[in-house]
Length: 388
Image 1 (cartoon, rainbow, N blue to C red):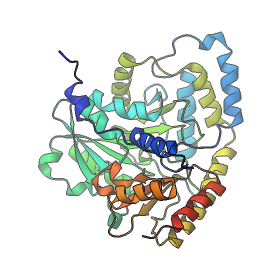
Image 2: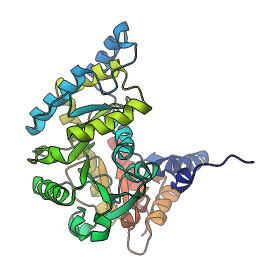
Image 3: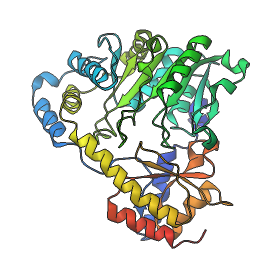
Image 4: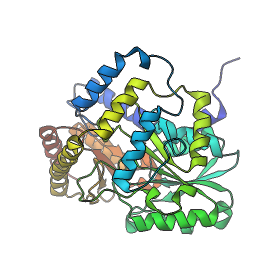
């Protein structure tokens, strides 16, 4: 009898970025010089002070044993201080913060703590695929909240039918947004928290890109809203802020009940973050933030190159001061996949089709600013030679 995957695994669509890697490698194998602007993986190295902190901590035998499941007290306290400095939000590090093996792990595990089979999560789309896959693995179903240009790519959650809301447990939001780059205001979060309390919903906020910006003010946190800690949990990552995607460390903060539930799941499926990596993360969060500001300015400069090139090619770009993504409208008459396919096969440039993030992404494509300026200029020159 052949071995078969579970029904849940069969229900998963192909993971978008794995599929992109496969197609890119096929084109490379034909000898094409490919400029990859598809996956959002920073190209600059991790700051030296973070690497030095890891080296020192890795040499200490005290860090070689199993870590504490929820995170070292020192790390949790550093995160709490970061929230106080950055957002004016006081947190109890013992009950309102939990370490994560990267925010993706926390996003995927969280539904296991609060969903029962048949429960519904409300998820934006287009969106990072993990909100849906985590829901699926927990036995729940996802109801989509379309993010539309006319709404500034903010969800119209009050348009959700009442029969759906009665079954809903979790409402996902992600700002600054991947893939669109859209931002949310504190007023948006105030209304969201009020709605969640009114409908007995959990707000799960993915804030992984909050520090990738050249804006004058920090992007607000949902936890700044009075009463938010009764209904909300926020997921953060050091991956994009400090160019630490491979290090796998982040955190969740917010409601003590939500943190406790996530921690109970984690204690049964993983053994926490390597302590040396936690020490490195503390150095990143508590050290000089010059590198964070510099990366924001670098992405701003790169974005200017790309926007200028795309507009010269007759393409429209959604304006933003956040994330290292460019959300570009596909030429009229083309599907997202057709547009991206033409760029890859005729120009050797990799973008991500917007519909890969969900049906509402049709008509758009995402470009990641993860190449140096000369390569971005070359990519724009190649695109400019195509006729749409």
